[in-house]
Length: 167
Image (cartoon, rainbow, N blue to C red; front, side, top):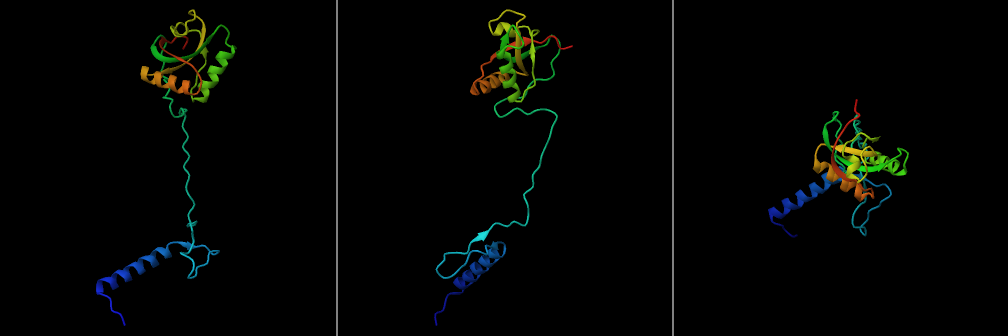
């Protein structure tokens, strides 16, 4: 009969107990069989608790990654940073329609106007031209938005404009 030092015996008992405790926490796959030729029993994940899903809804639209939040606290005649996405003579122009669709897809609420002082000029068009812009708190936010639009194939010009026609 072979004798083991007490430390090894305790280690063997500890490892056996740990293996039994671990095995008790899993559910064995009834299709799996174990015998001396298989390396280990197959276990299925514990399905006794369903994962929880939390849905949060808000009043504001959150732009996709890469798009900063839109400025919404505009005042009549206030300066603000904007990404001017399009300009045209006719509000039904395909450029205006495409720019509005791109803005909506980015999570922004906007519409065309001919009242943003400096927007048409930023596009190299005469004042009073209909433009479609998205407004931001800072020049950095406008630059980030313009880069995000450009990454999606939509060109925009960053400009500081004065908003009118808000009343």
